[in-house]
Image (cartoon, rainbow, N blue to C red):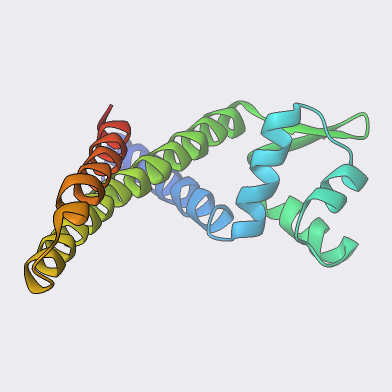
Length: 156
């Protein structure tokens, strides 16, 4: 194999190794939480991270920080994000935003379905009970107003 072929293979192997390190480091929730914490505060001491993290003891936190060495660096007793750490932190922020958006979208659909079921129940009850004027004239319009208001707030 020629020199260029070997160089390309080495670059590919280095890339795959870096990729594996990144995913391995981010595979644990505690490490993602530490990364978010340091990203939010810019500079954090070991003690501050220990108090904020779910690490049960100092050796466990040290282990997690070692796994995050690609993303977090120690300078003058404070941990801060490296260049790649800032990129990963921003990615974590985006994925959190997408999770919240997906939850909200799911909630909208569930609320809409709940609204439909509520109306079906109200109408079926009115028919079954051979609704009197009070139900027809007062309760159903109030139910309609609440239903429309909730639906409007969900979709605005």
